[in-house]
Amino acid sequence: MMDSFNKPAIFLLPLADGSMWEVGGSNPMGRILALRLAAAMTLQPLTSRRRALLMKAVKTRRRTLIIRGSSRQIRWTQLPRERAGRIICNVGSNVGEEVFMAYILYISQIIAHFSEKTGGLLLHAAMVCKGRNGIALMGGSGSGKTTSSRRIPAPWRACCDDYTLVMPDFNGKYWVHPWPTWSRFFQGGPGGSWPVRDAIPLRAIFFLQPAATDDWAEATARQPVVKTLAAVEQAMWLITPQLEKPQQRTVRLRRLKNVIALTQAVPVFQLRLTLTGQFWQTMENAMASIRR
Image 1 (cartoon, rainbow, N blue to C red):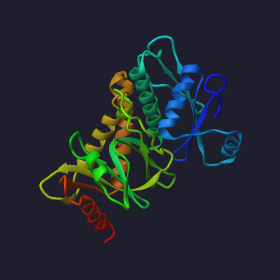
Image 2: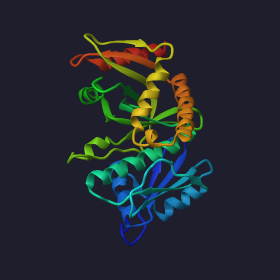
Image 3: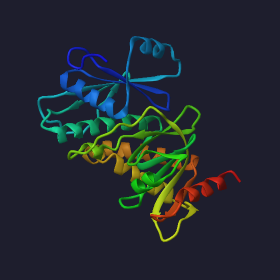
Image 4: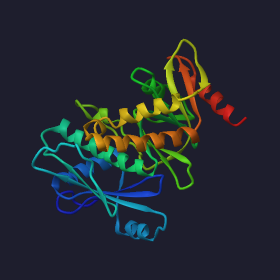
């Protein structure tokens, strides 16, 4: 890895829509932020050989995210602009670990924001998978996302328990990327790392609802759109509310379009679950109904 203070540390983030992000810092604080973001997302350094291969890739959409620390506080009322695939992300001065982590959280949401331009969505959702079947588990506080992630047995595995990035590929097939649980980095939390670059096909979405017995039903009417939009707003809480009204409107209209496309392409279910039942079997029964 390159020296984080004397040389630019640049990391590679490939996403399922064919985009290839190069993430680095333009000054000492920016480089430290890039290093911390890369550690949480398990991103690999960008080598000269990898860069050469990227230049040859015909379908690769390249973006460069440059993180720049400032001596003053920044008010994020406007999103960074993309110019020729280059995005400069300005943050304020480092005034403590909690604020430092808020900057990293902001940077991660900037990546999610630009992913929305190609149909992506960052969801407040857990992600579990069985083989190459990825499942997004959505629900409000207390719905059971984290508990379900911890309880699910092998051969199922929990990939993340708080945020999930959903991306369509060139053929309109949806994939899910595990996203860091940023709350684990605040207030002396244990931190952690997530293999963000490892995308898995998204097979279904389940909205969680605590209940007396485990059961499932297909989501109906506008329920999938309304609840998925709410999950996006919860995931992008640091960016969206601070934007000026015209930009908020533009962002939310694009999200609505993306949510409609997602919920039309991927089966959506209501999952009623208990704290002790074998809810994963209920999910398998629901998914089996798709193939009948």
